[in-house]
Length: 198
Image (cartoon, rainbow, N blue to C red; front, side, top):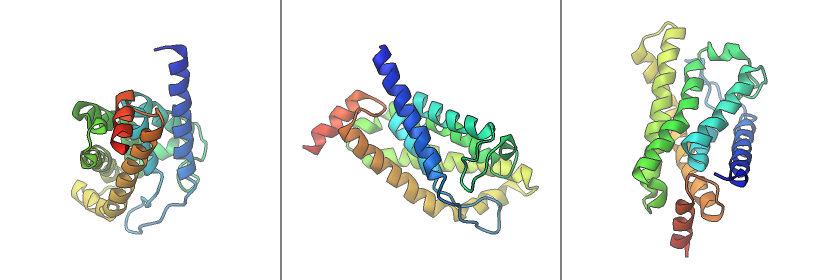
């Protein structure tokens, strides 16, 4: 990798980190029966994986979470500090860090970005994004809130419809961005999408 490519990747990583931060400005919607609100910020996690791939997507989310751990109030609702990782949403935050790695790996293995099958890409984000994050998040929520794992998993059902919409929207946004800019997992995917768009 040349210095120019490295600078480009780092710039794109910083841009996606900024996007995740901006999505946190939208306030969370309290659910009521569990201490985890419905937020828009997790769409930024899906976009990080979709646009940057596993390595730089993980770096973008890691940078964001590092800033949160340092105390910057960047999470939805203006939360920040190391204590949030021990609170009810701590499991979801840890899963956010791992989700781009998992999504990016599955996309690379299946060549989803290079195929015309958008539903394959959506399915990967649903599985490796939504399902993975919800299971890990529910596991920590059950421990932290002294509830059964099954109850914690059932409580996540309230988030599923919105998460499915956000994940699907993230895929379509990423595919449009990759169609016009070399902003992603591989150059081949960009070229392939451009050809299909003609």
